[in-house]
Length: 190
Image (tube, rainbow, N blue to C red; front, side, top):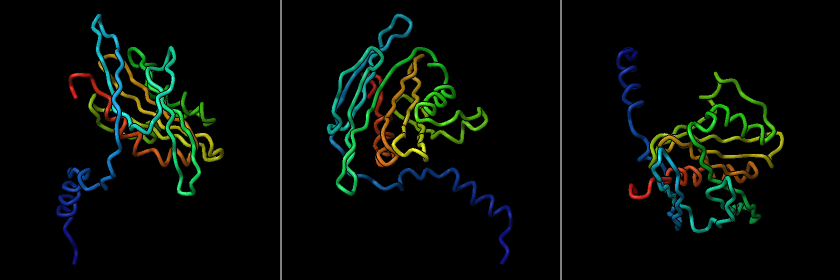
């Protein structure tokens, strides 16, 4: 039996418009801790916060870092790894997402990509501050070099969240990292 093309197109359109997020596997909840930071925009102080799993250990901030965490990963083998998560804020577009992606790629010894390939390397997400992107960068020739990064517009600023570790750690923490990035919010708008 041959199915008419208009039926195939109609079914495809319906499938593309469905919100499949409600069908994803629910993971057990993780205890959270809330942190805040203040950013400046046009003489107005805005306070931004986030909710991090309580297992993440806060570490010392620096002049660039608004938040720092040691994130411990326990692998199925029982071995552990401590990854580094940083949160920074830059004014304006922070140099641009494309340039930041290539800067991060260089930090894990990977070559720059072309502007035309940018969309192939990003994951579009929506969090409490709106739409943002996440990148997963893995050096397959050196599995100790990998990174997750979130680029989040925040009222005339950019919030950058970066987690560095091995490829195994980055793969294991991808879901948790994305969930964390979605929690970044303006205080009072939770």
